[in-house]
Length: 437
Image (cartoon, rainbow, N blue to C red; front, side):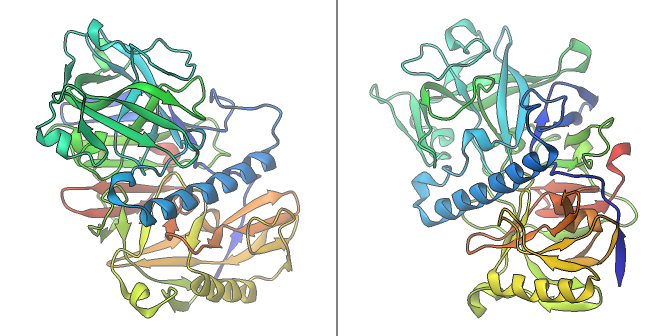
């Protein structure tokens, strides 16, 4: 079984900017517009880069991010948050903190938990465009005490020198770092009073000593992972624990992607399939179980470096911030052989050596339909989910071997409404035209 590959020059939606454009706000849910990081609408847009440069850059970020996940899994529990490098942040999200509210632009990341921003007084800070948050100027700020459960919920937190305030310390894989006080504050999303969502008593890190590779547009990080202090987990009873997104292909430049929170994040309807979230350490990541992948009508069982690993539940994570899908070497080799056999085009090497399977063709080619078989959910991927035209005459497979943590990346998620429900412990997929969501 095959499908015609009809792609305009394409690069990943992996790097998305959440700019302030709140829509569909209700008592128990809200939706935010997403702008792709590399699009001309993004503050990160570099006009000197070609489309192909941006695609390869996104591939490189994908591999770098996967390597940080690998390091975080090998490290001890006190450093499991060290899985993000600021320049590789996959979303920027504009929020406000405090009373009166001060605008904060943070890297939003599904592979990180803690919300933090640079704060006054600043012992050491990197340069940022926006004013620093000053907790003394906010009537709703308070410190988290050392003996509280909130302090205990963060592995990198400890008692301050006065043995009263809870302090945190993170160091990241690229030598970036943040240190400061754990606080509680009012967080607001929305540009106008009629389109605002206010979240009181949100725990965040008030960083007084920060540095590294953070860009000056960025104030800090907003964690959307599965841990107890992520933004998703901290939302109130009716909004908390649920979010979804729908990623638009880049060629649809007149449309924005969406991320939905609370009841707006529910995914339901004809064609939806769901797979269980698997609880594993660290709790930040969204683990699911991949049982196999079909290339056309030929199914290949998932396998890893050992039978024990292959049979484990939660053998892959779903990550919106990784471009490529990364799989164990032997399993990937099976797929490559089947894809090459089923594709009527000349196989050629990737000139930059990033991806493992490419075909020479300036015209549309027939490529096999690929289906990801998760526990309880068969996700049928379209050509746009598995192949990318990375040069005018070169089409490449967007799954890559890795000896680290397997990742179901975001190219594979384009034009799906992907919903996370932390309470029901499931991830759902619904094929969709994301230009209409």
